[in-house]
Amino acid sequence: PSPGTLCRTKPTDLVFIIDSSRSVRPHEFEKIKVFVSRVIEALDVGPNATRVGIINYASAVRSELSLQSPQSKAALLQAVRRIQPLSTGTMTGLAIQFAASRAFSAAEGARAGAPNFRKVAIVVTDGRPQDGVQDVSARARATGIEIFAIGVGRVDMGTLRQMASEPLDEHVDYVESYSVIEKLTHKFQEAFCVVSDLCATGDHDCEQLCVSTPGAYRCACRDGFSLNSDGRTCAACNGGLGSALDLVFLIDGSKSVRPENFELVKKFINQIVDSLEVSDKQAQVGLVQYSSSVRQEFPLGQFKNKKDIKAAVKKMSYMEKGTMTGQALKYLVDSSFSAINGARPGVPKVGIVFTDGRSQDYISDAAKKAKDSGFRMFAVGVGNAVEDELREIASEPVNEHYFYTADFRTISKIGKKLQIKICAEEDPCECKSIVKFQTKVEDLINSLQQ
Image (cartoon, rainbow, N blue to C red; front, top):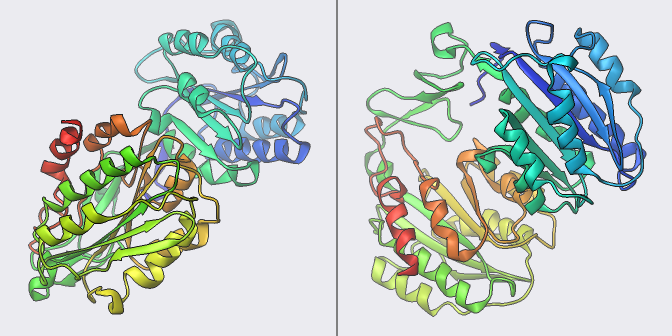
């Protein structure tokens, strides 16, 4: 659930560093300005609240707005509207150095660092910089500047990671084009938000119980009830179904995975299967492989025990073609979780999508339909997987449902974050046979290389 609107922003010195090199077309630059304006609109701005600065860069750097500029919301928005693109090269390192040495200086209106203040830079770029960013970014971070990096289009993801603060999954974002950059607005509005205890204030939509979490809340249910897929309402427990799970793996078998890594993925699947209680009334497992086409390896319920499931996984042959993730997601929605393929009514549905590259087809409609259908979707990306696509596949909250690691040999890093909870711990309908990532997956994944 979203934390609602009872929110104030922590006092922040915020500087936008925006790329206006020649690769950014005029209408795309307008989209950046809209994004910046939307973030500003959500802030508490003022001399004693959040101050905003803007750096415009290409081959050179231009300060469009300093932290000591008039800090009324109207003045800031007017200043954003006046910004014009520079339309030359891409000197991102120079822009970050300028921010650290000039924009965040006391002479330009920055405040002395204190626990009550944050120093934040948001870099928006669509290209490979013509200068180095790693060292200047490290020096900027060392002075207490928190750096968010937003990449657009054919940006170099490695460069974004060199710029951004830790943890990288919270500070690096990717969008396919400037036309969709506005969808990041909500993330950054929340990033600067200090949220009230919404359970205490009553500003929540939970049917039964509200549980406060840092910066937000979640809903829970009283004894004898389980939480519905909408995350808000509760249903009475109905016998044994509370301990059941329909789990389908959707595995990328494209040629970029390579045979040795495909075997590693199969081993990963089977060690997850080892953590399940498989039966007609408990966990059922299905497996789908995709590349240029989609192939159901086995449907839900075909195998009634772990031994048979694991044997079928081991026999799975590698398709080794393209990457049609959208087509595979559509198959998951239309076929894998259908009654004819073994899905059970009233049983939680979980999909785990594993991919290592950009999809060659459109994924948005199928990804949305999967989540709208009540399926809990996890996205695991390796190597050249596109983080924007992983986020689109993943259920809310996105940061708990998508995971990325640089290559298959370091897949164990995912284990610390990949924790699936289908039922709340205090729920008497708790899914005891669920994928027990909470206690087992880290050990399982860490053993993959042994």
